[in-house]
Image (cartoon, rainbow, N blue to C red):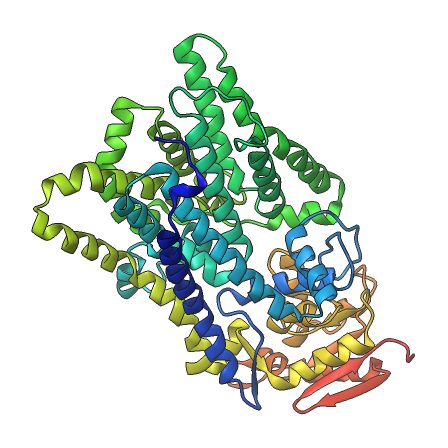
Length: 555
């Protein structure tokens, strides 16, 4: 493997990358544009198609930055609590939006476009570090950029069986580019880190880390990852540690070269890891948030569905790497792949987040296997067709994740409203009123799906709005449901809770909660709860079919 130089990638190659990356990023914009265009007088698309609950929390974080904050607070939690240095990336986007004068949704999608282009460029650059020939570079980039799994086949068999290629966007670059900006940014940074270490760990390379040879860059990438997506460092950092241990065992000596370079990644990340541990230990609310922030990995069979085809293709390359264990690329990539596969099933709340980056070493071995094994066993006339067939099988899932959310935005809008992709337009008028008239420490009571969007659209808190960022989530969700279902009209307005409700929203989503699905009639107690709110209200604002009850003192 030759050292990477800027002139290793020709202008023609970068032009090709720019065209492909531009097309892919444009493709991720089309569903959002379509959903926005078809918004009418009744329904409003708020800017998130995939997983709108989490998307709304991203908007809430950006809004906090827009309001001038550099520290994060859980606005989906009704109690006031200490802020902490978490989710700084989205706070930064908010600060940028404040300075430039952009809206939350615009800065989010501009960041998504920018980080996606960065990611695709970084992936190609990694391919150029590994291979000098054009074909493997482009094949590596293509499999990473548009590759996915066979979840589309399983989906037809069992719609409830969602493999990682259908519900873990950080696992696949195109899916990551579709969903948010911090996933593609993290994948791109991992690719750049891998490029540095594939060079400095090659045989015969003995230079110490410096500004010129990537030492400083490794520190910077590590710091950014520790801020933006800390789990992204787990598997790569684990691979570096394992490489040091194996090298030390084989040499019977401390491998100082590997230690020095690995410390460029591990040491800068350590203070951040320590800070996060202290925050979750001493900040009670943040600690409870961390405890309930559970994202488990899918079962192993579904993971094999997502990665199995690529793993099958990569098998000859992996076998060769295990047998020879060469330092010229294979060694680090093999350890990265191994550690990554293990950690996604280690008992840990954020298992699913550890899928990020897994596809990079896997596709590396795919291309190694294709170039060194499969193309030597497939007749020349059929080689192109074999590669095309591989791509044909791994692309459809990307089309599914691109188009399925549009069903809720365009096809069945009532279903879209149930998931938070759309909301009735009158709610937006309520949000605007709250943004102008409410204070940040005031609390709004609404249905869960509306509560998810309120902190994204107005600088206020909610009783419940998110399964992780509302603390304690299960209790608050139960209290909200009991209220709007007419089972308990008193608890949320009593001394049993450590907060005061200042506003109550009552519209179609809340009314739907009060309907008994079996009899299609209003549940007993619903009108009593609504009357209680009306009696407590000092002001009532009407926005079409949505009523806003103001319970605070007039001002």
